[in-house]
Amino acid sequence: MPFRLLVTFGLLCALLPLHHGAPGPDGTAPDPVHYRERVKAMFYHAYDSYLENAFPYDELRPLTCDGHDTWGSFSLTLIDALDTLLILGNVSEFQRVVEVLQDNVDFDIDVNASVFETNIRVVGGLLSAHLLSKRAGVEVEAGWPCSGPLLRMAEEAARKLLPAFQTPTGMPYGTVNLLHGVNPGETPVTCTAGIGTFIVEFATLSSLTGDPVFEDVARVALMRLWESRSDIGLVGNHIDVLTGKWVAQDAGIGAGVDSYFEYLVKGAILLQDKKLMAMFLEYNKAIRNYTRFDDWYLWVQMYKGTVSMPVFQSLEAYWPGLQTLIGDIDNAMRTFLNYYTVWKQFGGLPEFYNIPQGYTVEKREGYPLRPELIESAMYLYRATGDPTLLELGRDAVESIEKISKVECGFATIKDLRDHKLDNRMESFFLAETVKYLYLLFDPTNFIHNNGSTFDAVITPYGECILGAGGYIFNTEAHPIDPAALHCCRRLKEEQWEVEDLMREFYSLKRNRSRFQKKTMSSGPWEPPIGPGTLSSPENYDRAKEKKATKQKIPLLSCPSQPFTSKLALLGQVFLDSS
Image (cartoon, rainbow, N blue to C red):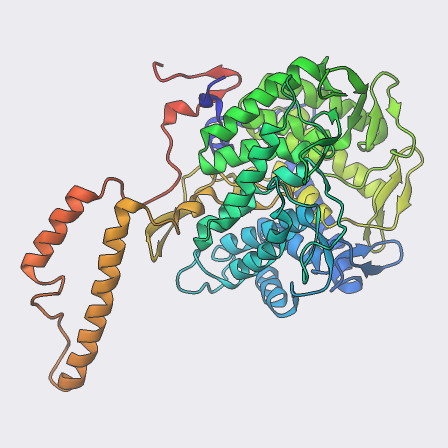
C-alpha cells in the first residue's frame, strides 16, 4: 500500500460532505446543538469541582470531594484541561490558567514520574497550549511560536525525561526521578507503548526549540522496536530495554501497545515521513493476517500467531479512528460497529470483554470514562457524516451523566454490571473524553478548519502560516498544529537570507541610533545610502540576484505534499495519473 493513502484530518474535513441533521435508524438524529451544550455543562461540572476541591493536586477524588497526586504532582488536571477550555471558547479562563501554571508548576522535584504519562499529558498539554496561546488572546512574546513560557516549561519537563533514554538499546525506562534521573534498581521492563509514544511531542519540541536531541531519541526508540519485531511482523507487549528481549509476548492493538501504532501514523502525517508510514502499513498487514477475526482484533503469540487472549480491550477502540486517518473507512466502520454493540450492552466499554462469551472479564468490569470509542466516532463522522456516529455521542452523554455524575464531578465506574463507582476522576476525562464529545457535536469548531482561514506570523526565520487546520492530536487529545513545525526551522536555502537580513537590521539600527543622536532636531530620519547598507544600489542589486539564484522555496512555509499523493476517500485511491 503506497504512501498515497495518507489522509490528514484536515483533508477529510475539507473534502467530505457532512450530513448534519440526517435521520438515524429510528427516524430521529441527535440534535448537535443540544448535546454540545450538554457536553459543555459536563465539562464545567467536572472542571469547577476540581478547582474547588482538588487543586493544586493532580486529580480530583469525586466521591470524597478532595484531591490527590497521581502522575507526579503537576496540577495535572489543569494542564490536561487547558486546550479544552479554548476549544469550548473560554479564552479568559485559558489566560488565567496560563498564569497559574507559570507561577505554580515546578519540575525540579524529588518525584518518581511515568515517562510515558508525563510526556503525553504534561509535555503534550503544554506544547498544545503554547501553540494555541495567540488564538486565546494571550500576549505572546517576540519570536513566538519559537519561544514562550509554556514552550520553556514543556522543554524543561521533557529534559527531565531524557535520562530514561540512556540505555544500551536507546529504548527508555518506564519511570524516572525528576530530580535524580533513573533510580538504581529501576525495572528495565517497559511496555511497547511506553517506548514508541514520543515522536509527536518530541519532534514538535525539537522543531520549535532547534534542539534535535528530543526527536533523535524518539526516533531511535521507534527504530529499536521496529528491529525487534518477530519474523511474522508482530511486536509483543513488554520488553527489557537493557537487553532488547521480549518479556511479554502477547501481540495485539490494545493496552501496552496501542499508541505505538498510533504514533507511527500521526508521526508520519506530522513530519511527512514516508518511512514511518511504511512501518505502520507493514504492521497493519501482520495485524490483519494474525489478529483480526470477523472485524474484531484478538491477542496472539507474537512469534507463532496463535490466539492467546480472545478479548476486546476498551483501549483498542482507538483503532477505527486510526484506520480512518489512513483512508480505510469501510474497515473502520465495521470494527466501530462491533465496539458500539458492547457500549450498548453495558452503557460503557468494560476494560476487558470476552468476545466468545459476550461478557465482561472478571476484575476488568470497570469503565474509567475512557475516550477511545468517542475519538473514533469523531474521526469517522468527519469522514462520513453517518448519523450513527452521533448516536454514539448521544449514548455516551446519557450514560456518563446517569451513571457517573456525582456532586463533585464524575466518578470512574468500577463495575458496569451494577454501576458501582470508584473515587477517581482521571485527568483524561477533561483532556480527551469531553473534548472529543464536544468536537463530535461542533462541526464549525476551529479545530475542524479546512484551511479557509489562517494566521500569518513573522518569526526570526521568515513568515509562516498557523491555524489553518489539519491538527494532529497526541494520544492525550492535545492538538498540535503541523504547520508550526515549519515556523522555527531554518532551511539551508533560506539561511543566507535570514542572516543577511538580521545583520542588515542591526546595522540599520546602529546607524539610525548614531544618526539620530547627531540630527535629532534636523527633521525625520531617512535610511543611509552607501556601501554596506541594503539601500546601496549595488548591494540591493547583488542581494536581489543572490536571492533569485539561491532561494528555491518560498519563505512562506507550511507542510507541503503533492495533492494527488494524499487523497484517499472512502476506500478509493486517486493516483498521480488520475
